Image 1: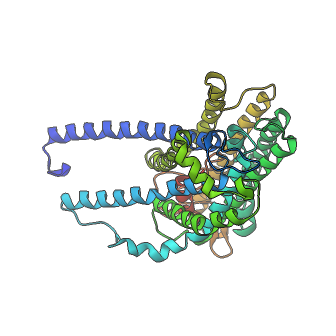
Image 2 (image 1 turned 30 degrees about the horizontal axis):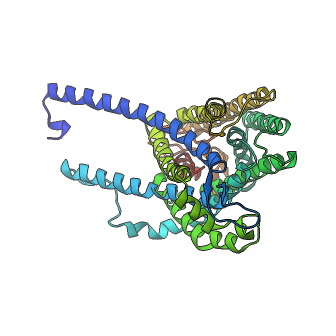
Image 3 (image 1 turned 135 degrees about the vertical axis):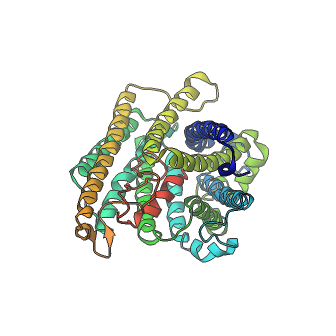
Length: 455
């Protein structure tokens, strides 16, 4: 029988079991976020360094590395699209539970998947931006180490703030500005350490290749900030679960890659086998003949799926503030795993330490402080609006078009959403105020960005 109809002693036992189950689920989610989030970055970098037997020509032997950044983008989108399966299973399970308990379904759940068809088309635009950003990141990762790549992604916080001020007419307070300055300084330190040490540089390459790789990663963060701004402004009232939006972005990205991008790079001239920009037939041959490449491809798709799912669970159970801390730890884990692979395995993967690693560590610490300072600015802004909303002066904080200059989620939200400098996509801050709080157009984008971390 339903829990509400149980005797008191049985209800107490039921509550204990449910509390223990929730505690286990929380720890499982935390572990999943750290483990699978680290795996996503490590697999992305390792794919470029493993060998297999593929096609050959006059300049490329049959046994060569899997340097296929465009193919890896497709693999990541496939992993994201699997989020639709988890969303469908979660919806089915919720409906089954409510029906078994004899309770009416709450809300207007769609009768069929087709109910989302028109809404999901709006996700195409951010999917295109996500595709461009992912391609830029994968191309940049060829020339730099995984840890530097992960830390440089803190630049997205800066671009997102600039675009929110420029296009959404939001205002930044002094704590926001201090956080942005620290973020810029941290990115400069990390980039400087990579240039000075030459980390990630392949044999025969000069410093310009490392600079080129870092430039592509920073540029990708600008594109992802554009994606965030678009989702903020246009997708705020989409009313789709975040995991579903991520899944549709993966689905549309996968279709675009197969129908447009991969055929285009196959016929464009370049340095891959056969004089092509990227030879997809060679990619398929490498996957067919190399067990290591197979492991990385399947592992990357699975890690991408589980990372997104674990991130959603962490945000739901503990809130986005706690996830901010975990994302920071994830960056540290990437660096630690890279060092372990370099010093304690014979795979030839990973990165070693140098005299400039202290500068990289200092940049990492500055990036973390910058993120926390920026988040403090959100808390100050939210408190100010909460105080003034109580006196009826909320309208003074509305930008033209009704877009609020602070980031508030609708009443009933579980927790505030903080800026995440090191996640695959930066969630812009949001703060739940009270039953009369203003609803920002960013609230939906927050949930999507905390779930989405394709990269």
